[in-house]
Image (cartoon, rainbow, N blue to C red; front, side, top):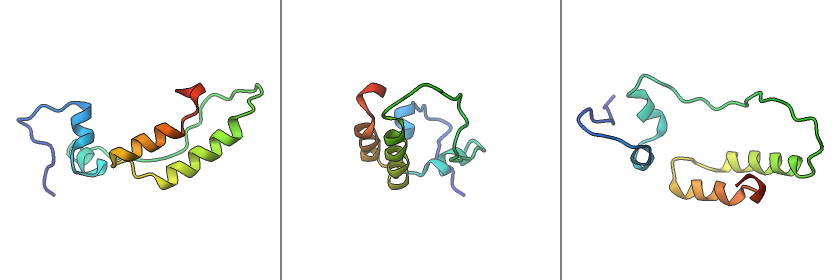
Amino acid sequence: MTKVIQSNETYTFSRYASLPYDPEDILADFDCTLTSEDLQLPFFSGESPFLSDLRRRLYQSLRLVDLTIKMAYRAVDRLRPAALA
Protein backbone atom coordinates (compact mmCIF):
# COMPACT_ATOMS: atom_id res chain seq x y z
CA MET A 1 0.00 0.00 0.00
CA THR A 2 1.27 3.47 -0.91
CA LYS A 3 1.81 5.88 1.95
CA VAL A 4 -0.43 8.94 1.76
CA ILE A 5 1.39 10.98 4.41
CA GLN A 6 4.76 12.38 3.40
CA SER A 7 7.31 12.32 6.24
CA ASN A 8 8.96 15.55 5.07
CA GLU A 9 5.65 17.51 5.17
CA THR A 10 3.88 19.27 8.04
CA TYR A 11 0.16 18.61 8.46
CA THR A 12 -2.54 20.48 10.34
CA PHE A 13 -5.96 19.06 11.15
CA SER A 14 -7.54 21.00 8.28
CA ARG A 15 -4.87 19.74 5.90
CA TYR A 16 -5.63 16.14 6.88
CA ALA A 17 -9.32 16.83 6.22
CA SER A 18 -8.56 18.21 2.76
CA LEU A 19 -6.45 15.25 1.64
CA PRO A 20 -8.06 13.31 -1.24
CA TYR A 21 -7.87 10.02 0.68
CA ASP A 22 -10.29 8.10 2.85
CA PRO A 23 -9.74 8.50 6.60
CA GLU A 24 -8.97 4.78 6.82
CA ASP A 25 -6.06 5.19 4.37
CA ILE A 26 -4.63 8.17 6.27
CA LEU A 27 -4.89 6.35 9.59
CA ALA A 28 -3.24 3.26 8.09
CA ASP A 29 -0.06 5.32 7.71
CA PHE A 30 -0.05 5.60 11.52
CA ASP A 31 -0.95 1.92 12.05
CA CYS A 32 -4.38 2.98 13.35
CA THR A 33 -7.92 2.05 12.39
CA LEU A 34 -11.25 3.85 12.44
CA THR A 35 -14.34 2.35 14.04
CA SER A 36 -17.87 3.63 14.40
CA GLU A 37 -19.87 2.53 17.41
CA ASP A 38 -22.42 3.75 19.91
CA LEU A 39 -20.93 5.25 23.05
CA GLN A 40 -22.28 4.53 26.50
CA LEU A 41 -22.32 8.02 27.97
CA PRO A 42 -23.61 9.08 31.40
CA PHE A 43 -27.39 8.93 31.59
CA PHE A 44 -29.50 12.06 32.04
CA SER A 45 -32.68 11.29 33.96
CA GLY A 46 -34.38 14.68 33.56
CA GLU A 47 -37.11 15.52 31.08
CA SER A 48 -35.99 16.64 27.64
CA PRO A 49 -38.75 17.33 25.12
CA PHE A 50 -36.41 17.36 22.10
CA LEU A 51 -34.25 14.31 22.88
CA SER A 52 -36.17 11.67 20.91
CA ASP A 53 -36.40 13.93 17.85
CA LEU A 54 -32.70 14.78 18.12
CA ARG A 55 -31.74 11.10 18.37
CA ARG A 56 -33.90 10.23 15.33
CA ARG A 57 -32.42 13.07 13.24
CA LEU A 58 -28.83 12.19 14.18
CA TYR A 59 -29.20 8.51 13.30
CA GLN A 60 -30.91 9.36 9.99
CA SER A 61 -28.18 11.85 9.13
CA LEU A 62 -25.26 9.61 10.05
CA ARG A 63 -26.51 6.89 7.73
CA LEU A 64 -26.70 9.31 4.80
CA VAL A 65 -23.52 11.33 5.25
CA ASP A 66 -20.09 10.48 3.88
CA LEU A 67 -17.78 12.38 6.22
CA THR A 68 -14.97 12.49 3.66
CA ILE A 69 -16.85 15.22 1.78
CA LYS A 70 -16.58 18.79 3.08
CA MET A 71 -20.21 19.44 2.17
CA ALA A 72 -21.15 16.63 4.54
CA TYR A 73 -19.65 18.54 7.47
CA ARG A 74 -21.89 21.46 6.59
CA ALA A 75 -24.93 19.18 6.22
CA VAL A 76 -24.42 17.72 9.68
CA ASP A 77 -23.85 21.19 11.13
CA ARG A 78 -27.17 22.41 9.68
CA LEU A 79 -29.00 19.56 11.45
CA ARG A 80 -27.58 20.51 14.84
CA PRO A 81 -30.23 22.17 17.03
CA ALA A 82 -29.43 25.72 18.14
CA ALA A 83 -29.30 24.51 21.76
CA LEU A 84 -26.27 22.33 20.90
CA ALA A 85 -24.49 24.81 18.63
